[in-house]
Image (spheres, helix red, strand yellow):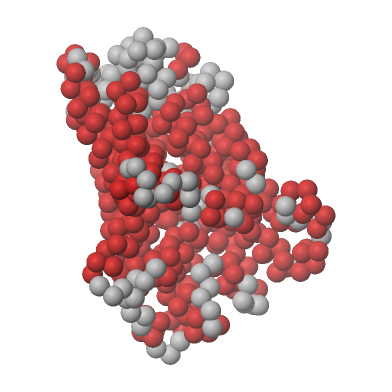
Length: 494
């Protein structure tokens, strides 16, 4: 192995480190799924015209679909014990792997900042409940960074909570997810019980009918919505090897993820629908943000535990989904200088610099444009990696060559030009739609016929790039394509 391409965090994990069971993957997904964006997910679908059942079925289907690449990409992590950026070296090249790694990392940094702000807001709400005068402290800060002093302190407090678990390593994240899972489930059930006990007829909260006039109208909304739901976890479906590398066996990751992802996402979205429907009856308005809902209560026995659960929910999601991946991705840039901890710190610093409170204040420019558009980038990457691993290489990798600059994965100057070409081919059809989305391209112009396909960006990118890569790699030498017939790493550890 070339020492410049490996460090303790990027190296294949040992057999003794492969101790994650189905339960651990289940708790991982409970911790990831129980979060405010999941709670609010169905709201956009219902506001778009769906009834509650249509919204939940759409969420379920989307998460079952994204579960497929999640499990498939997780296979390499289990078999070879390698993280996502090292896994990407096989298809994109030793140096080229930094391209898909950085595309994934930058998205995570954006989400890290936003989720950290949400967690800090929950802490600030708790501070205000205990000390109402905090709202008037340090208001001069607004002219400097855009928020007052106490909210910024709460933001930084939650920031340090995230960095603590990253600094302690992946084992602490495993502990965090397992520890918080019971509290998150109890908190969700408590919300559901409150909804049930607050109205005389629970069925009344589900009386809204579908607003679509025809089946055609429904499907014109359904497919873009489905793409958005898939895009919600398109990020983690790429870097899932960062977690499955610690699995005891393939069965553990398959069963744990299948039980945890679609079920938890759908059930917590259902809680959001039920509770928000009750707020319409009680308060005359739909309150989709659980933090704002908690502020309607005055009993400390209710408010304090509720806000603590919100902090837990945001922490478990943020650490696992938005820090682990970029920490490894930044480490892949310069393994000898950036380890997992330093990569996590870089992520944290970027999360502060982007000032997420300003991004959320203007969501049209960030959340509803860039963060939705990233599925057009991540879909093609997933297609290339999956075709390379399952079709080109038949799940056989030469692990030692993944850490060699002059091995079979070096291609030309460390880049696989065929992967780069396939990536560009998969992204291209979605460019007109993205430019139209941000107001820079008229659908009546040349290639305007491609604009509607942007709603299916993830699907289109995945299939086009995957197909293009498979065709381009037909010329790849048989010797390289079937490398590792005698695996240098056995399943279960190296």
